[in-house]
Structures are given as C-alpha cells and as structure tokens.
Amino acid sequence: MRGRPRSFDRADALNRAMQVFWAKGYEGTSLTDLTVAMGINAPSLYAAFRSKEALFLEATQLYSSSEGSCIFSALLEGETARAAIVGFLTESAKSYSQPDKPKGCMVTLGALHVDPSSTLVCTDLRRRRSENLAALERRIAQGIEAGDVPATADAKSVAAFYQAVQHGMSIQANDGASGAHLMQTVAGAMYAWEGLTAGDLKS
Image 1 (cartoon, rainbow, N blue to C red):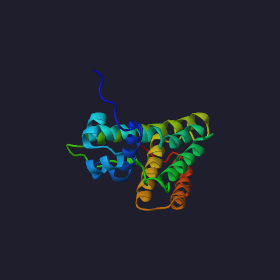
Image 2 (cartoon, rainbow, N blue to C red):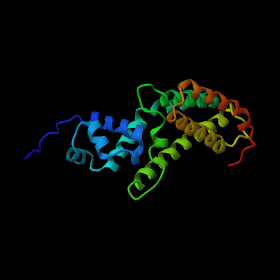
Image 3 (cartoon, rainbow, N blue to C red):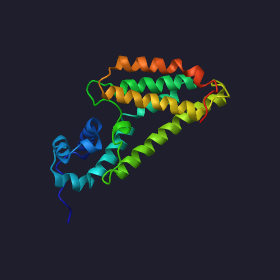
Image 4 (cartoon, rainbow, N blue to C red):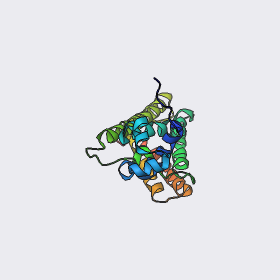
C-alpha cells in the first residue's frame, strides 16, 4: 500500500532550511526556527530529512551547488591565475553581501565549535573548506605551469592566504560590511599578489 504523499514541496522546504542555517548557523538554529521557516511540523521534518544534522548536511550541499558555485567558477574562467583569484574574491564579495539573503558564507560560518551534536556537521564543513583550499592551490599551480605565476611561488601558501582573506570577508559581511567595503578588501589583498608569488613564503 502506498504511503500518503507529502503535503509540502521538499525542494522548497530544503531551500528555506538552508536560508535559516545560513543566517543562524547550525547551533543557533532551533527546531522551531526550521519548522516555521519550512512550513511543516516536526514529524514531517523528521520523515523527510531524518534529523536536524542530516538536514543541515543536505542544506550545505544545496548552498555549495547554488550560492557557492559562481565563486569557484571564477577560478576556471580567469585567463591567468591572478585574474582567477580576483574573480574568486569578487564573486565572494557579491555573494556575501546580497541584500535579500543572509550575509557571509554558510560553509565558513555554519558551525565552528564541535560538540557531541555537531561532530558530523563540523567534519563536513572542514572537508568542504579543505576542498576549496585545494581548488585554489590547483589554480595557482596551473598558473606556475602556464608561466603567469613565478616558478618560485609556493602555491599552497598563496592559496592559504587568499582563502584566509575570503574567510575574513565572510566575517566582515556577517558583521554588516557592505559590498563596497568587501571590494576594498579584495583590492588590498591583490596588492599583495606580487610579493606573495615572489617565492618568499614557505608552507
């Protein structure tokens, strides 16, 4: 016998949950916050998503594939490594300061402190941040191979610096910084490019 069909749009409910987690973080989001935003009751939430933790993990995947996609697309579209980093930071500034959406980055700010209820959540976010760092490092290494980045540059160290800039921008946006202010941070970070790629940094 077939079960009763869900009385809500699962994709829409997941998007609404993503917005709440993005705004409040994993620990700061209550079950009531989720059910009110999603327009469902707790039994329906558990039936569709199993748990708050599983819902967060699915919401984070949605964030990465939707809100975060343009940021990392810039790494592929830049003709040089420097242009790719400029695009990466510029798209980050735009994404983090959208007037109609939560501020900052869900992957950066979603959960920073591990407790028994958030171990898998923190592990997943750390994995995503590690993968993002690896993507930056690969693009800079491609620049070294192509000759638009000095051969003496340490790709890992340069990547770590620009990821740190991006994370800082996320915090600034969460604290109320405007898109224009974030773009000033981008400009300042790119002034460091020549020195960073000169090979003085060691990982």
